[in-house]
Each structure stands twice: as C-alpha cells, then as structure tokens.
Length: 254
Image 1 (tube, rainbow, N blue to C red):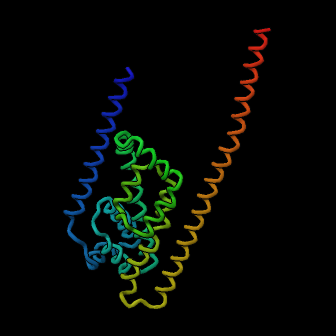
Image 2 (cartoon, rainbow, N blue to C red):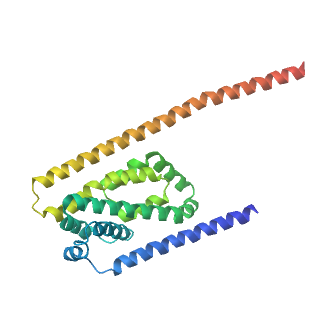
Image 3 (cartoon, rainbow, N blue to C red):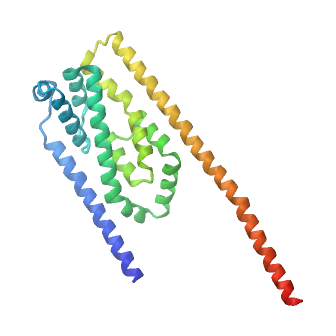
C-alpha cells in the first residue's frame, strides 16, 4: 500500500510539472504572437477609457508578465498616457499581479516534483530561502541579474514564503518601474520633478529594504533563542530520565 501511494503521488507530481511546462509554453506563445504595441497604440486603446482603461491596462500587463516578452514599451506608454504618478500605479499593480500569478502557478504545479527530483539539494535551497527569502528576492529585484518573469516562476519552486516574496517584490520593483514610466512621462530630458520623484522612490525602497532586514534578523534571533531555550529543557529531561532509570535498577538489585 505504501509503495502504491508513493508511486501515485510521484506520478501526480510529474503530471503537475508537465502542466506547468505547458502553461509556461502557452504564455510564451501568446506573448510572442501578439502584435507589438507602440505608444500610439496604447493611447488609442486606453487613453479615452478613464479608470476603466487603467484597470484594463493593469490586468493586461499582469497577464503579459507571465510571458518573458519585453514590457518596457508598455511601461513607457503608461507614462505617456497617464503621466508619472498614475502610470507608475498602473504598471506597479500589473507587475505585482503577474508576479503573484506566476508564483502560485509554479508553486501549485511544479513544487512537489522539483522537490522530489532534487532531493537534498532542494532541501538546502529551501532552507536558505526560508531563512533569507526576503533578502534573496529583494537583492534579485534591485539588481536584476535574473529576468523578472523567470524569477517569478523560480521563486514558486523554492521554499520562500509568499509574504516574504510579495514584500520583497513590492519593494524591489519600485526603482525600475519608476524609471521606465518616467521616460514616457517626462521624455529623455527629464526635469527637476523627475529627479525629485525618483529620489523619493529610491529612498522609500531603501527604507523598505532596511525594515525588511531588521524584521528578518529579529526572526532569526527569535528562532535561535527558542532553540537555545529548548535545548536545556531537553537535556534536563534526559538527565531526569537517566536518574529514574538508575534508581529503578538500584531498587531491583536491592
């Protein structure tokens, strides 16, 4: 019975992993088949729809984030159509939506299979991301050595918790989002307002990152303190058990 259960679970995990591959392939295909949108096209589609167009843009942006196609034109176009503030809001919401969808698709469909295939290596990676998930994701967002879409899917395969992933993503994408939207809102020759806004956003990003580091360190210290407090209790219990065993043996000999 145990062998059958293990085989069925393993088969189900492989099926989910294949489903994830089909999902990603479909997203890539749709992204590649869509006609490229320029700034004029974005203005024609969303410019006259008001807040409805803003919500529609964010939803479409989030869905396109599932595919690794360049989305810089969309971000720049948001700045042209709505200006800096509202454009940042639209792109930011769409990016967070796409990051969440990709994370959970990967987590629900591919997590079990990857953990089984990688074995101990998966356990080591999970331990790292569970302890330093926020800092790891934040660093990869601020210094994008890994493409945005690829990191979204890869994070779902690791042991990083969604709150840490979402918080790090929310902080880490602010500078890049602001920079792209600003190109559309202010043009290449940005005025003082652009630099003030970008500086403020950068400061907020640093504050958020610092707060995340503090919270992460406190959690690590709390876990270490809990482990240290449990260790003496366990040793005392083992010592007491040993004394009882010895006294019992002495009574038997007597």
